[in-house]
Image (cartoon, rainbow, N blue to C red; front, side):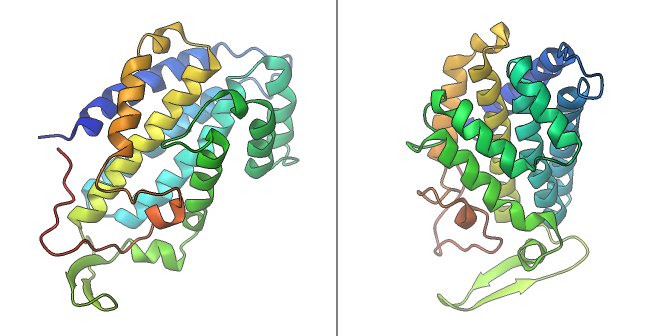
Amino acid sequence: MKPKWLALGEEITELAIRECLAVTNNFNPSDLQVQPIPFMSVLHFNACLSLSINANVKGWHSAAICLLRQCVEALSIIEIGLQDTKYAEPMLLDWSEGKKSHGELRKSLSVDVWPSYGSGLWDEKWSEYFTNLAKAVQPYAHYSHETQGWQWVNLQLLSESSFIVGMGPSTYDPLKASRLTLMHILVGWTLTKILLESGKSENINKYRDLIESLRDEVAKSKLLFKGKDWATQFLPIVFFKNGYSFVDE
């Protein structure tokens, strides 16, 4: 049986992607170079999320988290494209010409847009939530030590400081797979929240209560550590105490 956050999250994410494609397809700046950027960003988000889900099922967890990082990066471009054209056009033009980084775009959003968003996953400000999430996935931009950690399958915890792990062509790890699935739903919820707060989709506004319910279900998952340190949430090797079930209902 699927946990509530998964069943609800799949429905909400699919809806949000459809609505974002419709909204960004109507983006109409004066500069034709800028016009397709938001729409293409939604396409990239959708493709990377789909491929990350498939890689996770196959046990290619390191590839799955690298693709998840791409989803988070795409969110900033999508969000800029959902703003007023006078604000979005110069920002996207600077980004396309390499004059602004994703970090600089997020800094502008934190000043001009995010203060109206309310809280993130728990009680933190949205700027704190998204900034920390973006930093947490940064190591997966490259084949790093952290990335390699997602290739190990957790076998047995021997003590607080020692454990047994395995490796192979496809090391499916139920715990890693479950954690990544939750993160897939998390980025889907983040996209939905961004679209909801933009006010550009009347259809998504009808699902406001369900979106809040999804946030609550993700926030209370056993797969998350109850804190705002997203770097900890994305640690590749995690063990729970013997006899503890990480499975959400």
